[in-house]
Length: 131
Image 1: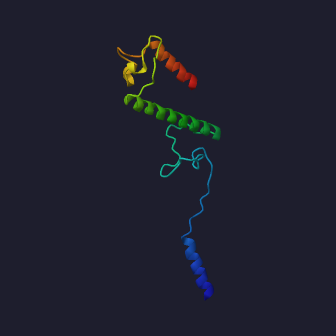
Image 2 (image 1 turned 135 degrees about the horizontal axis):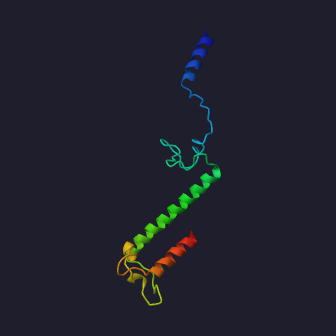
């Protein structure tokens, strides 16, 4: 009788145990265990940039994503600082124009008081050099 009761208890306890699911590694779920993959979406790749990709490509794209995020944060901080009226001291060119003599935001690129084209070209070249 004790054997029957023990068998029934073991059988009922096994009914509540999670089923074993075989994990297979395919290109669709190859990066499911990476940092940032979370429910309900799991690994989210809407453009399919990592279809049939290896770990090296995944690491490169993650590095570039983090780098561009940091650049965007610095650009936003630059907007906040200059809109607050804080500018670098001293002249921006040999003619003696100061940094605060140019308008903030997009007005610094277009309009009457815009940064000269040569200065804008130097800024773009410097950013390209940093990249």
